[in-house]
Length: 281
Ligand SMILES: [Zn+2]
Image (cartoon, rainbow, N blue to C red; front, side, top):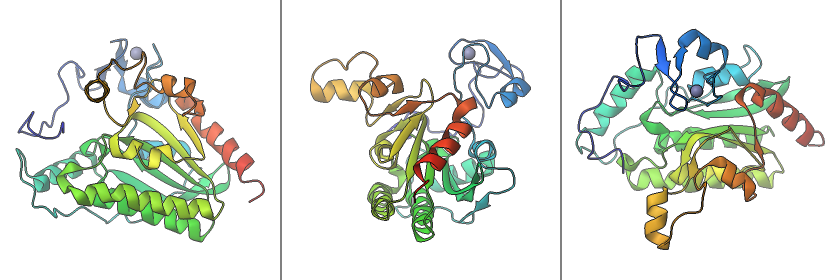
């Protein structure tokens, strides 16, 4: 519900604490000053404390696929406004703002390419676009990617980062959980591999669907994952959440996450996993 009510105006600038002068920003973990070039060299990982900052989807694709192999699908698809949602700021205005700010048409990029020479299907969510909430187009692009991968028998890797379902679209947003999960079920029935990579944060309806359905679930260090936040959990269960609740390290200790992998090692780990697990497919 954070999209509603709190701030009626769309803020186009980053928080003052996060930006000092243009090319510099503060690490949200250690508060060290980080230069843009320094971050570019580390894929947005703080060199001082190894905190993993969010990574825009185009950079993630460059960092994952073999060079010049990305073939994007459905780039032209863009959300409509089925509920004519107004709220403090009209949904249509929000969409325009985030398109201009990110250069993307929606909060996910999908396509085919190769990883270590192996053909894969890749979906990458981009938190900069409306918190990468899963609306009808995010769900449709992911479902089409999965169906294409099933048809030509390719493994899928999906990087998730999301605040959950897109509430501006009401039931149209919630329906995407079912649609994408159904497509993944048919991919699994075809005996094909799906690797889910959780990045900070992966929450709500995305956590309750795509993110948790991987045959292999990998996460970046320190990323926050939850279906609901600690305050809601406390309200429902009438007790304090366990220590570490919401952090990926907690979920690895309890068997939900298979691997936590540093961003610098992620491409190699994914490449080896795909080649190993698909060797007999
Ligand atoms: Zn830091």
